[in-house]
Length: 112
Image (cartoon, rainbow, N blue to C red; front, side, top):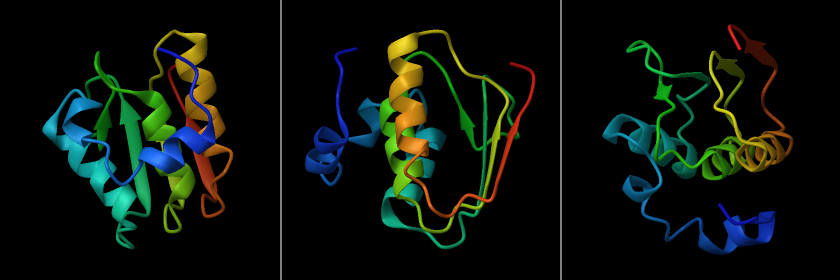
């Protein structure tokens, strides 16, 4: 994965095909909700396969985009992180996006 900065995500957010940057239709739907500013999406749970999770991180999930859309959310208040894959570049892009969020009040990190 090449390094992308915030300007890259800003320039491409409206046009990115969500199905191409995620591993499942469920993940694409939740990215769409984040991108559209769904006020009902106040809690997001990330895992590596728990069917109860909102976003199951798998091969093909671009964590840079996930972090960017989380960072842009004005409604997300709780973020549960139960899994993150290895990879410094993916983690950097993900955390850079989250750091921009102003609405999250609680981040729970488990089982890493």
